[in-house]
Amino acid sequence: MCRKHHGTFFATFVAAPLGTFHWRAGTEQISTWQSSERGKRSFCALCGSKVPSVDYDAQQVFMPAGALEGELGIRPQMHLFTASRADAYQIHDGLPQHAEFPSEWGARGLETPARPTRPGIVSGSCACGSMRFEIDGQPLRMHHCHCGRCRRARGAAHATNVIYRLETLRYTAGEELLSDFDLPGARYFGTSFCRNCGGAMPRRSASRGVVVVPVSSLDSDPQIHPLAHQFVAAKAPWFDIHDGVPQYPEAAPNPPPISTPAAAPSDSC
Image (cartoon, rainbow, N blue to C red; front, side):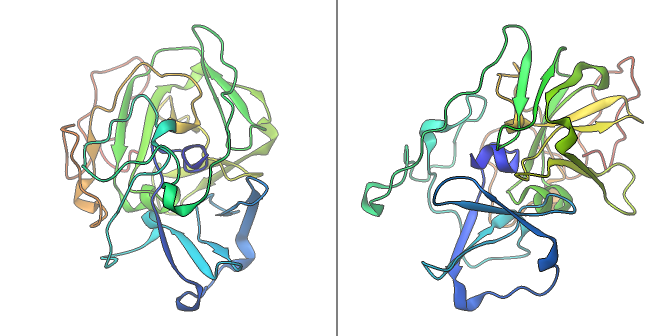
């Protein structure tokens, strides 16, 4: 469910005492989705960025780490729910791994049934399942993006996107729930998300002839692996890269020419 909501291979959270936290602005834009009987997830209704969730019973706040700036005074300590790890993502960092919650926490996760797919068609959906789409075509590339815009929008260490030709995407349910946000001043960057749950959704880029698909919005294996880490000069200081995938301080090199317009060498999220 974290992967679905953030549209990434994994989400990273920082927990802190509620007394140390306060909102500075924008609370009127916060939307909340009841993701389970005991869980809520919060996001900005304007742009879909994931924002802190407050647990008043536990007197704690859970902050998406990708939205935080600078050194945090703490680094990731463990991986949770590795039994649900995406097949395309391998863990290389040596941190402790737990199939669910650590046993000493005395808590259990919730079952998340697999969503239906069709043979030969790549299927996807939002976190709440109200929006569903299919992609009939081959992926052009997949990359991790560490730029500050992607980190803040996804609330994660980085965004991971799969690029397809624009005409391959079609929605099969819930397209009326799609919200699009264009970042003022940006040539290309924007977000698309389900206004009900905040789940990251494919972003159409008509000027480039492509659709940018958050990797964990997919319910099918895209049959491609990440080809690059880009904008690592803006990488979160608490996140280290261990996977051996090529790294580029700014945009990754363009792929071979395709019949649709090629992605710009920068601002290409």
